[in-house]
Image (cartoon, rainbow, N blue to C red; front, side, top):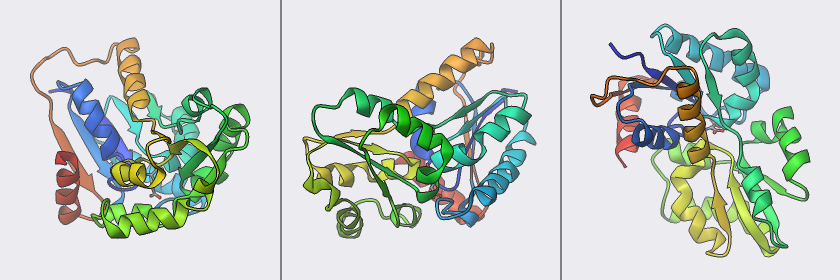
Length: 250
Ligand code: DGL
């Protein structure tokens, strides 16, 4: 029996990371747990996010996972440190792609779109000090709710994005950092709104590369090369699990 890699997010957002991980590691088993019942996390307090995350991670640990991917920037900021201090399995977490945004700078600004909770936390502040001089921080209010309800393209999505971004886009912009895994599902609409001269950056591929590196280093890569499996668990029950499956198949 293969030991699975556990994935966690507040809802469906982390499926954007899971998809890339399944492509990179097709023979691994994955268990994805989304805390749909308590999403969105981004409007909650740090303590609350940490407690909810630890509670969900315990459910994954009960399934004997061999590594944990926190496929959620908000939960990473609030709980990654605590989890790394207490768990004996490797913990892979997200970081907004500010470094590549910094490297791509050519006279314009960087926009960071993330949840309010991510933007105010210490972990992000430290990243900003290193790579984010003058970056414009925008809480992506409303996007997570839209994605959770199946809206990631079209008029309603565009309206929400214009409301959030139009003011900042009046200034020359080099890149926009998607600092929340849900936002990747709106990538096409975000690209339309920001225009072709603005680079859209997420941290999905970097996170998956890190997962692979860590599994290799720890001798945890699956040796059995038969195709792996993907299982979805939602704290909101079966309908939400079916929705997760659909998002995975998109
Ligand atoms: N997907 C999450 C993130 O990457 C959190 C969204 C939320 O629940 O607010 O930040």
